[in-house]
Image 1 (cartoon, rainbow over the protein chains, first blue to last red):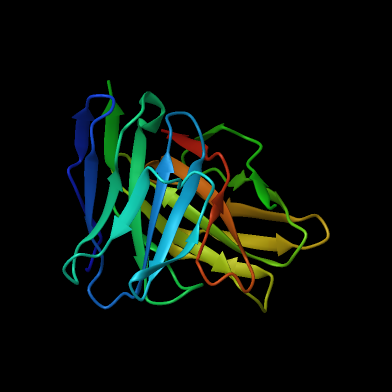
Image 2 (cartoon, rainbow over the protein chains, first blue to last red; image 1 turned 90 degrees about the horizontal axis):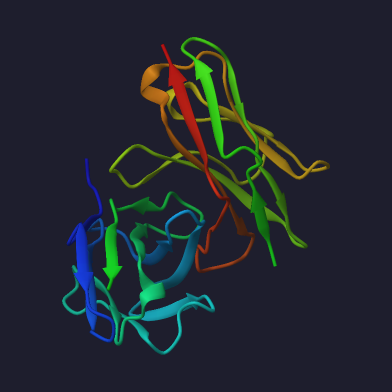
Length: 113
Length: 115
């Protein structure tokens, strides 16, 4: 069964460092997303991406964040200068089109120290 | 802005008993409704969704949910739970005509099935 794959599963980084979270969406999907879940809080939408551009983004997705689909298969989330409050589980998801099932990856746990 | 409330953070239940996980939402516009399940160390998996039509929606693993527009609710039910249903369950909404597939999630309900 096709699945969304995220790497790494856990990343520890020092405050102020840049971090890149990687995702391989399902191959025939056209819409890609990042969500995050701070420990003990709700899953929050960060950004959606279609046709090589951002289609929606939340208030959380400020200038410190960027997304890219560098090679037609990977979908990355970059945080330029990490803060302690960026510590969270980050989920990548993909779907064929809106309102169809969004398939989620297993998540990357980011710990900023 | 829309919001989703899952009233119960944890629901303990014995195996083979029925269960209902509650979800209420608020939105000034029409929404689509979803239930996702997260098993330990796994990602979110879609259980069921309501887009239009019949208000009673059947999903995977014997779960069903009923959309009640007047009460702005979308409660999840299963008539007889199994140990394997132990997981975190998330209710989510998406605004109709929002092209970005931006889901707004509730806080989650941890279902704990006991033998």
